[in-house]
Amino acid sequence: MVRSSSSVTLETLSDPRRKIRKVIMTTMGPAADGKLTGLVAATFTPLTQHDEINLSVIGPYVDYLAEKQGIKNIFVNGTTGESMSLTLSERKDLAEEWCKRAKGKMDQVIVHVGCLSLKDSQELARHAARVGAHAVAVIAPSFFKPKTADALRAFLTQVASAAPALPFYYYHIPAITGVNVSARDVIEGIESLIPSFRGVKFSGSDLVDFGQCVSHRPQWSFLYGLDEQFLGALAMGAHGAVGSTYNYLGCDVQQLMSAFEKGDIVQARKIQFKIQELVTYAIKLGFDVGVNKQLMIEI
Ligand SMILES: CC(=O)N[C@@H]([C@@H](O)[C@H](O)[C@H](O)CO)[C@@H](O)CC(=O)C(=O)O
Image 1 (cartoon, helix red, strand yellow):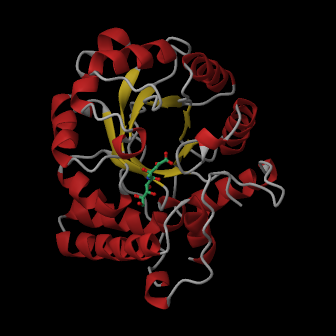
Image 2 (cartoon, protein in one colour):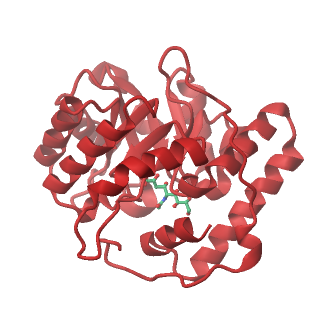
Image 3 (cartoon, protein in one colour):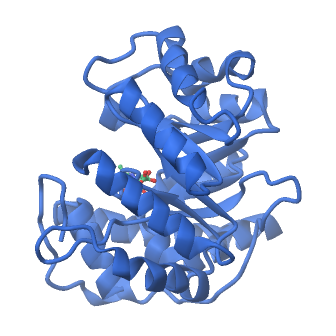
């Protein structure tokens, strides 16, 4: 079940796209200083047949990610989690359950708390801190859009002030928010406003902007969010990635990172091309959260 407006489902997946091997490897493991690195799965929100959130699935889901996909970090209530189609109360229940179930099994749980309303975002940020999230992330508001980096920083600053002890990430996804301020501009001087600022979840296609973020503040975490071109972002110095496909291709992408680290670009490219093939195929089917959930079931 999906809560977002579209609900195309996929009946079957053709064969070659299902054959990506699964081997658990861990590359880019947890940094000693708590820096967020490596793969982060952007989790789906389980729903019942009656369109209610299904908290009972979250425990087994965490186990699956840890044991079968080698995933050590999760990003909850993001785009993949359909947060913008959920109520505040549902988002709180989900955040709490993910944090509870991930305890001792995941290194970090990052809770996305962005909303159109600043006060709602602050409420969710305070709640995330209370329930034991390791970090929060915030997307740009997309109805009344900030037109400048200053305006966006002001919004992020006020959300961050509600949970000052939690590491804070800006969630850059211009194709969806329509906020086309470069991430490099957004992070300029942001540490003086948000001392807890730790990086960007960068779901944009502009690798120049991404590279400039990495080179400007290499001590922060810049995690890439377009799964189909992660290899390009690795070449730009990505510290890891946050994405939906890591729910079911986690092991393969660990292999991609490992090959990249070893300098085996041919192998890294081979895996990236397979992921591109899968995503291209899914796009032809009207890739949305419904199709994506179905991919997780089928693969
Ligand atoms: C628009 C979108 O959903 N992008 C995904 C990608 O993982 C995306 O599904 C993937 O690159 C396939 O296109 C992530 O960037 C989103 C994400 O991490 C999140 O759920 O917040």
